[in-house]
Length: 147
Image (cartoon, rainbow, N blue to C red; front, side):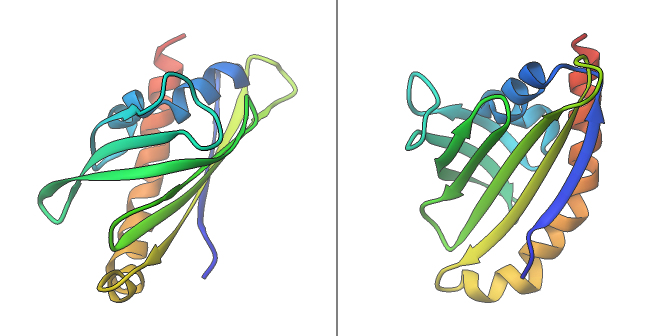
């Protein structure tokens, strides 16, 4: 299946938008089910691991991902490395004509392992598609409120 993709334009330079959107410690501010997050290494690079705690099915669960692409301030990607449902996330940030504005695009897809193979098409993709517009709206609000 094709990834779930959403974009928003923000009144922030690409460097600021990129730094905010990829920071696991800010994800709880704009992603609906994230409780907290942190980078497991001192600096971001390909191979870095991030841990986020998410509310999934009414319970808090840790999700560990590994950075697979890091090209600041343009592109960042990670993939889940454990659990029955593993997200694959790609973030791109484009500077717009006015350098004070940028477009943030987030694509997410999932792979299922074990029981996750059933859950991804039946529940997970639908839930992610439903949450994405609200997440992008909160992301825009947070970025623009910090100006």
